[in-house]
Length: 62
Image (cartoon, rainbow, N blue to C red; front, top):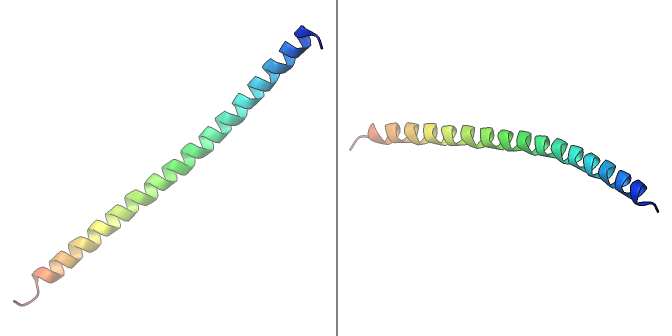
């Protein structure tokens, strides 16, 4: 195998691998943003439930 051919194939493969990893990175960023949004909504919902419970307990007759 010629050194020129080997080097040509190697650079081609490296470029292809990088393109795949960029697509994978974009997919992982999208999943991470969705997870962050879900956790943020969950924490807001938890805070609203806690506030409603505190108001309910506050208005209980002593």
